[in-house]
Amino acid sequence: MNEISIAGRRIGPGAPTYVIAEVSANHGQNFDEAIRIIDAAKTAGADAVKLQTYTPDTITIDSDAEPFRIKGTIWNGRKLHELYREAYTPWEWQPKLMQHAAALGMHCFSSPFDDTAVDFLEGLNPPAYKIASFEMIDVPLIRRVAATGRPMIISTGMATLSEIEEAVDTARGAGATQIALLKCTSGYPAEPEEMNLRTIPHLAQAFGVVAGLSDHTLSPAIAIAAVTLGASIVEKHLTISRAAGGPDSAFSLEPEEFKTLVTQLRVTERALGRVHYGVSEREAASRVFRRSLFAVADIVPGESLTSNNIRSIRPGHGLHPRYLDQVLTRKAACAIPRGTPLQWNHLL
Image (cartoon, rainbow, N blue to C red; front, side, top):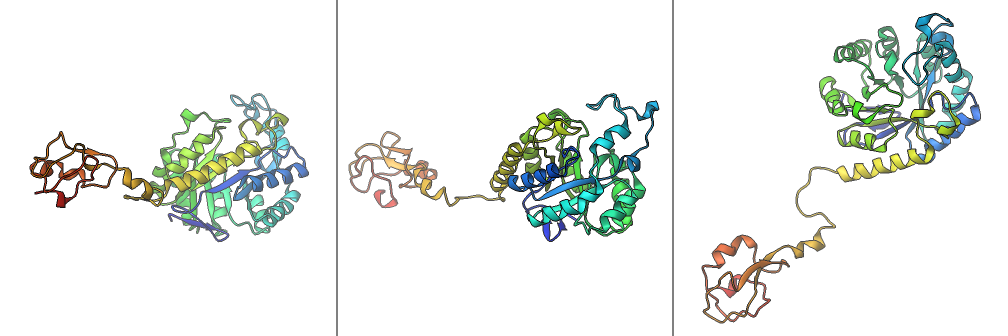
């Protein structure tokens, strides 16, 4: 389970980071804006775009009661139903958006929020499913998605270790064989000190899964650090312009920021490389500038070799410095001019 495959794309240790651009509510209820976001994701180098499949009435109810009023977040004071009415992606768009992404060579899949969404998405033959952090405790939903047999990516924001265990056990028990877990901090936006990225390798080890990051910060450093810790997936929200506003704009990257992030991730992957010791290809020309033993004064035949006439200096044409103590017990077998790289045939 340390790797999964989405539409033939291997995801896991040793494979390029799988970068997902989350469209979320950033389309502003404008189909053309959703298309622009997908185009921007392609230009930025994302591997996939992700949608959300719900309606206001499948995710909550229209109620003015106190429990349905949002408190303590960037959406403070709003009604849940009102927020989701603004944020949801019309279902009739989704086949067209998936087709557009596919035409650009990207994967496109969605987060379903109830059984009706799964039924709808199954008709679109998605390459994978994403379970949002808030739905990670919805055991029946996880069971339903797992039963499709498609790869599952599960965000773990707010989740305890036992809740994650329950979700993974449920998914596996219902037939899921390809599971990825994303470390997520469900703050909007999230602060770097809340990210606890060291959880990523622990998720992979504890559950035997591919691990990654769902990132709600605005700093590219967070995703880069996650990749160095073994994240195989990075998910970030993408918007054309934060200034345009919208429910998710405050924690979304703009196209150039997203492109910079992907570029830096790819550089990081190349730099991580593999376990390697010794001379690299580009180091070969520098090897000669390491230290070696040289005559640093003119030496006559039979003269004792001392620290006054033999030193370890750059460049590396002479004997290895490890032999210095041994050399200083010897005498010169011949004249050794100052600046001569010392060789064994110079010694008595």
